[in-house]
Image 1: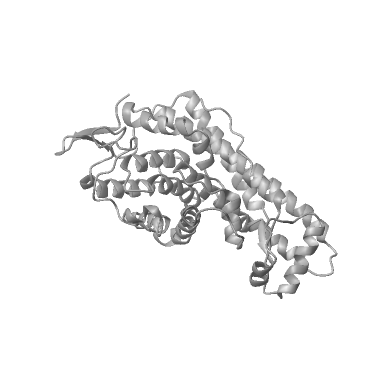
Image 2: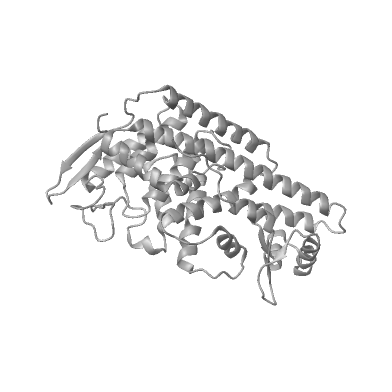
Length: 380
């Protein structure tokens, strides 16, 4: 297997890796073809069910939040999904504001990317804007948010240098052209979408175009690509749960490409992740919809329509407060409070804090579905 790039010696005396342009020549074994077929089938089923869901865009919100938590966890941020959703609903959360902001920024960055896709596509400009929103006001904010790096970075243990690092990305003088080349590759329509984004994800991480946040931006691009190509109608599929659960495999497969040109192992791993996460997302979305339908039947015939309208809010966030309901549904605070009382009586909502005013409540059955660990098959 040929190395998909070249090691160059820098004036400072260390070596850096410069990846070749995409696409590489690929050897399609029977196993790899089967893995791609499995992934295509699974993501197709998810897309089909996503189009049939009565509220896919509302349901997207907790899936985005889940992805934000898991993607940030790979980078060492400790906030949980429940904490993020509770904070968004206005509940008091025992978590550092910095951790919550880092995770919340991921949601903002993805939503910004989805909004901008129709006008500028998966361009260099969009990549920079995503990074800007991701890193704004957080600990990595000193790392030039929205700006392609102009100094060398590297991957290694704490205290390492470019001379001792595990991996040294291209020198900064090479990065702008490499990013433009990657953006041009993403506009190519000659490859199957899952093959194309698997190759592009590797290339982005190999370039490492930012001083911080490269992993999160790279994972965001996977989701945005699948939406832009209409592989999915709405962003229900996220790979961070798979990458986080198989983290050592994830890094090993990426390093295998750079060190040995082992594209086959990386592609097989990526396709396996797409298949497993498609199945997982389909299962969660279906169970959430079933639970909401069960609750809709339970509130049918209530003296007020407010409890049913609150159920629509729970599809986007299982945490609510009377104040939040009042503002979002444009109803009186007393109406919101009575709706909560009715849903508590039905066992749908449970109080989750001890405040005397504007207490927070949670639909714990929905939160449990979202927080449940992914059921992953072993990687091969």
